[in-house]
Length: 108
Image 1: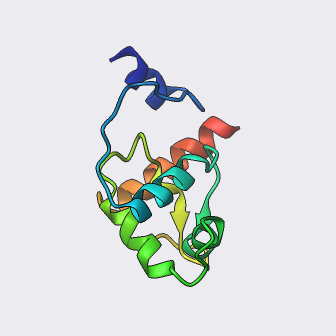
Image 2: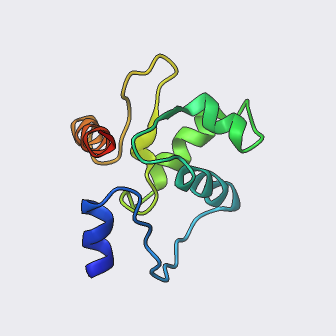
Protein backbone atom coordinates (compact mmCIF):
# COMPACT_ATOMS: atom_id res chain seq x y z
CA UNK A 1 0.00 0.00 0.00
CA UNK A 2 2.87 2.35 0.82
CA UNK A 3 4.25 2.00 -2.73
CA UNK A 4 0.89 2.80 -4.29
CA UNK A 5 0.41 5.93 -2.16
CA UNK A 6 3.96 7.08 -2.94
CA UNK A 7 3.43 6.50 -6.66
CA UNK A 8 0.29 8.62 -6.59
CA UNK A 9 1.73 11.41 -4.42
CA UNK A 10 5.32 11.57 -5.62
CA UNK A 11 6.62 12.31 -9.07
CA UNK A 12 8.38 9.47 -10.87
CA UNK A 13 8.05 6.82 -8.17
CA UNK A 14 7.77 3.50 -9.94
CA UNK A 15 5.81 0.63 -8.52
CA UNK A 16 7.75 -2.57 -8.09
CA UNK A 17 4.73 -4.69 -7.30
CA UNK A 18 4.34 -8.03 -9.06
CA UNK A 19 1.41 -7.59 -11.43
CA UNK A 20 -0.20 -10.07 -13.77
CA UNK A 21 -1.32 -7.71 -16.51
CA UNK A 22 -3.34 -9.62 -19.09
CA UNK A 23 -3.45 -8.48 -22.72
CA UNK A 24 -2.52 -9.37 -26.26
CA UNK A 25 1.10 -9.12 -27.39
CA UNK A 26 0.22 -5.87 -29.16
CA UNK A 27 -1.46 -4.43 -26.04
CA UNK A 28 1.55 -5.41 -23.95
CA UNK A 29 3.82 -3.63 -26.42
CA UNK A 30 1.71 -0.46 -26.25
CA UNK A 31 1.49 -0.60 -22.46
CA UNK A 32 5.25 -1.00 -22.17
CA UNK A 33 5.72 2.09 -24.35
CA UNK A 34 3.21 3.99 -22.19
CA UNK A 35 5.33 3.28 -19.13
CA UNK A 36 8.28 5.01 -20.82
CA UNK A 37 6.43 8.35 -21.15
CA UNK A 38 7.85 10.62 -18.44
CA UNK A 39 5.56 12.08 -15.80
CA UNK A 40 4.38 15.53 -16.87
CA UNK A 41 4.79 14.80 -20.59
CA UNK A 42 2.33 13.71 -23.26
CA UNK A 43 2.59 12.05 -26.66
CA UNK A 44 0.05 11.68 -29.43
CA UNK A 45 -1.48 8.38 -30.45
CA UNK A 46 0.47 8.78 -33.72
CA UNK A 47 3.75 9.26 -31.87
CA UNK A 48 3.06 6.24 -29.70
CA UNK A 49 2.28 4.12 -32.76
CA UNK A 50 5.57 5.23 -34.34
CA UNK A 51 7.43 4.51 -31.10
CA UNK A 52 6.39 0.87 -31.19
CA UNK A 53 7.31 0.61 -34.87
CA UNK A 54 3.74 0.52 -36.18
CA UNK A 55 3.06 4.04 -37.49
CA UNK A 56 -0.16 3.04 -39.28
CA UNK A 57 -1.68 1.33 -36.22
CA UNK A 58 -2.98 4.53 -34.61
CA UNK A 59 -6.50 3.21 -33.98
CA UNK A 60 -5.16 -0.06 -32.60
CA UNK A 61 -2.91 1.92 -30.25
CA UNK A 62 -5.92 3.93 -29.07
CA UNK A 63 -7.82 0.69 -28.48
CA UNK A 64 -4.93 -0.75 -26.48
CA UNK A 65 -4.90 2.41 -24.37
CA UNK A 66 -8.63 1.98 -23.79
CA UNK A 67 -8.13 -1.63 -22.71
CA UNK A 68 -5.71 -0.60 -19.95
CA UNK A 69 -7.28 -1.31 -16.56
CA UNK A 70 -4.39 -0.02 -14.44
CA UNK A 71 -4.29 3.73 -15.04
CA UNK A 72 -1.86 4.60 -12.25
CA UNK A 73 0.52 1.82 -13.24
CA UNK A 74 0.25 2.16 -17.03
CA UNK A 75 -0.22 5.90 -17.63
CA UNK A 76 -2.48 5.94 -20.69
CA UNK A 77 -3.71 9.41 -19.65
CA UNK A 78 -0.46 10.79 -21.09
CA UNK A 79 -1.62 10.09 -24.65
CA UNK A 80 -3.49 12.86 -26.46
CA UNK A 81 -4.79 13.56 -29.94
CA UNK A 82 -2.42 14.82 -32.63
CA UNK A 83 -3.71 18.39 -32.09
CA UNK A 84 -3.04 18.13 -28.35
CA UNK A 85 -6.72 17.82 -27.42
CA UNK A 86 -7.84 15.31 -24.84
CA UNK A 87 -9.98 12.44 -26.02
CA UNK A 88 -11.20 9.00 -25.06
CA UNK A 89 -10.18 7.91 -21.61
CA UNK A 90 -11.61 4.87 -19.89
CA UNK A 91 -12.36 6.87 -16.73
CA UNK A 92 -13.52 10.04 -18.51
CA UNK A 93 -11.82 12.98 -20.17
CA UNK A 94 -12.37 15.10 -17.06
CA UNK A 95 -10.30 12.70 -14.96
CA UNK A 96 -7.64 12.57 -17.69
CA UNK A 97 -7.37 16.37 -17.56
CA UNK A 98 -7.08 16.25 -13.76
CA UNK A 99 -4.29 13.68 -13.88
CA UNK A 100 -2.33 15.67 -16.48
CA UNK A 101 -2.80 18.88 -14.49
CA UNK A 102 -1.61 17.17 -11.32
CA UNK A 103 1.48 15.82 -13.06
CA UNK A 104 2.23 19.24 -14.57
CA UNK A 105 2.05 20.80 -11.09
CA UNK A 106 4.45 18.21 -9.72
CA UNK A 107 6.79 19.10 -12.59
CA UNK A 108 7.08 22.73 -11.41
